[in-house]
Length: 489
Image 1 (cartoon, rainbow, N blue to C red):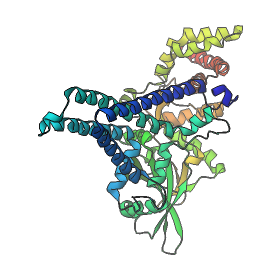
Image 2: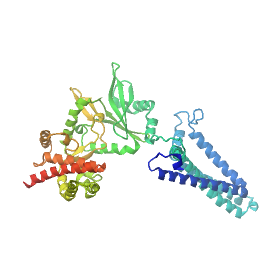
Image 3: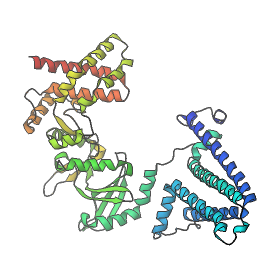
Image 4: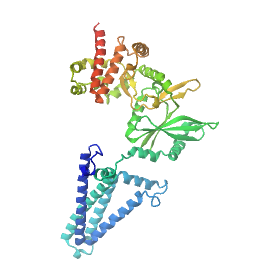
């Protein structure tokens, strides 16, 4: 069926996906046939029971249809004031399996009481124990199979675009929008945003006039941005605040930020002030100070200054201990297993030699990495994630990086060192040495270069770029040899 519908692949792993759908459809068909046959048997044995079960099922169906119907003019929920009904509708859509299980349990219990009723009433002489037991057994299996059929049909209907594209010609599959993004629209449409700002954030905005919010494209996955502008006394709009919305799967980013800033002041790492944190419909939100986006020409200079300030901050020991409880440092990540992945790409003589040297030097290399000073690394330090905020009472701007949820602890020099020459690195070493107490006298340019090469080497391996990793590995070994020569001398 799959080959007849299309010669061109529609989905990744489509053979396995199509097989799974086909099995589910055949199982549902078999269960549906059993329900029909079982209903016929119940009808012959106990017609009243069949009518009772059909009545309960129709009642549950009508209730569900009324609550979940989205068509205009047919909606039971017409206003946002119907909060209980809205919650019930949301529960049905997000927990339909549990809801179907509840309905099937109610149906079974009610039907069982229907069968039992003649035995506890004056109609005992009109009962047949054998037929009652048969009705009970068939009814139980029918209710169970019906629940599986309904649950399976709902599940398949949600995947109908994939199913149609796999088994039918000229049915095209377009990837659907993720649930989290749909929920963002539900809770943060313009009207809902305005209400949220006025009710919960007005105090943080100060005595400014009416607030207006606008969507801003976020550079970080899992976080939505909304710029908040307030009207000044002259009627002009000033954008001084940003609402960050953390999607449910990315709450850990805000938690990581809070952990970092419980040990380090925001201002020291160029993070904006956090004014308010709230939870809205399963989303965590944070209101921060905001400013103007940084022009590219200015950013080139500011980026290096931000990195130098970060390199000059010695991470508190307690923060390092907390981080290491769940995250490995570079010397913990560069293992024989990781370097061993390069064996498939070590074909030429020079590549084999480099690979063998890396494997033989891993313990000594990690010993050197263990002694390198760490800094608070943020992979999201870039132009589209930074703003310039006017300083109060002074000229100029303070440049802030908007998100810090993906921070980590890394050796000084990664990412930036390969773009700087030796003179620039020498100035950086002296600047860092003057700010930090954990810099040893022997620490120098080669240590920074080694950290940068190790980072690039690790990144290349994780991306499967093994030839490039071996090429970087040769430069890594050169820096490592220079450090070892200095130690020996």
